[in-house]
Amino acid sequence: MISPQFAPGTVWLVGAGPGDPGLLTLHAAHALAQADIVLHDALVPPDILALAPQARLEPVGKRAGGARTPQLRINERLIRLARQGHRVVRLKGGDPLVFGRRGGARAGGRRDFLPYRAGHQRRDRRHRRGRHPDDTSRPGAQRGLRHRA
Image (cartoon, rainbow, N blue to C red; front, side, top):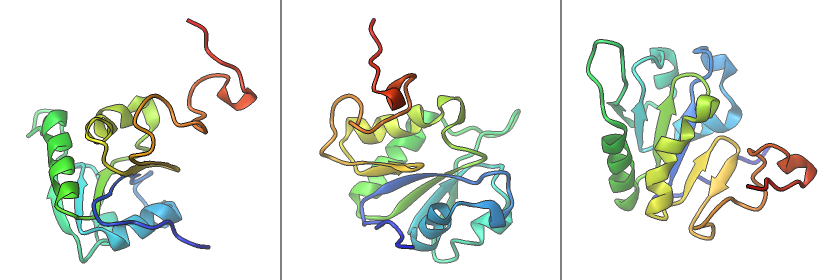
């Protein structure tokens, strides 16, 4: 299997899954092994963080009743680090695409036209507006149907 390229100046949105390092996707393990900096949620287990021994780890988690890092500040940090040429992983607890959680994390990257990868999809400067042609996240997209407002 050929791992996707994790180029400098790129942000990857990665999920820690159920918390067992053996259940991470191969792409997630590859991203952690290549990352320069990992911004991680508070609930990510230490065993998964240990898969990025070369990376600088920055906690940006949100726990009930504890310290919170506003999403806007996380986005600004992702953008700043990517513009400095770092390989950045935003490591979320669980699945990063459940409940539409990628929207806030990727909004800053999309607005500033930074290359990023969310789950299995890659976005870069070529896709500045709207949905990527092969984005199947909306209902009916896999059957070639369009949503009519």
